Length: 120
Image: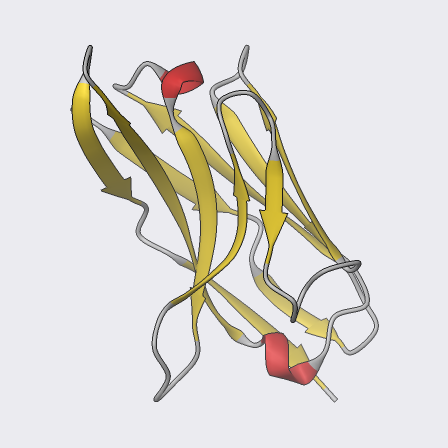
């Protein structure tokens, strides 16, 4: 059974920091690209950060320079370090695991989400 379990969300003041974690189980973690998405009320879910199996990272312009994604393959965990938080970062944050290849096929999984609220 595949599980992605996020933690670390909460309420923080503008300018503050939070660190989200996503612990994966039931998958061969190191072959998956891991991503963090977020969805604010009334808005579409958006990809904000992604790290490949080879640890190449990509960020949405809205978080570039403030957020850092990293992974620890020994712990099957991906992190999102969020600094200089703004009220517009308020959203539910979701962890995503994705792999596509001839050997293992295509698989995608989602976590249940964790709420991040940034007060002004």
